[in-house]
Amino acid sequence: MGTPEMARIAGLFTAALRDDPEETARVRADVRALTGRFPPYAH
Image 1 (cartoon, rainbow, N blue to C red):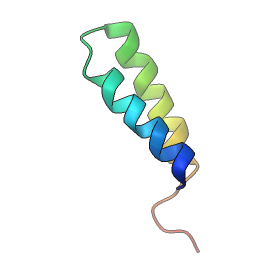
Image 2 (image 1 turned 30 degrees about the horizontal axis):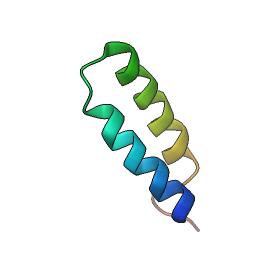
Image 3 (image 1 turned 180 degrees about the vertical axis):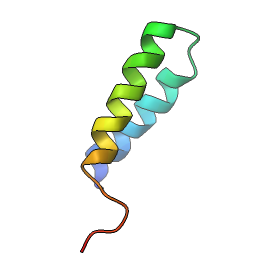
């Protein structure tokens, strides 16, 4: 993960703190997409 991804994570944290169901659904989808690109154990 590089600087662009870390900036995106900061934005996702901010968005997750909002009490908006639509925003929460979008954040979850974004997190799924981001973490899918970085598996926990790369070989």
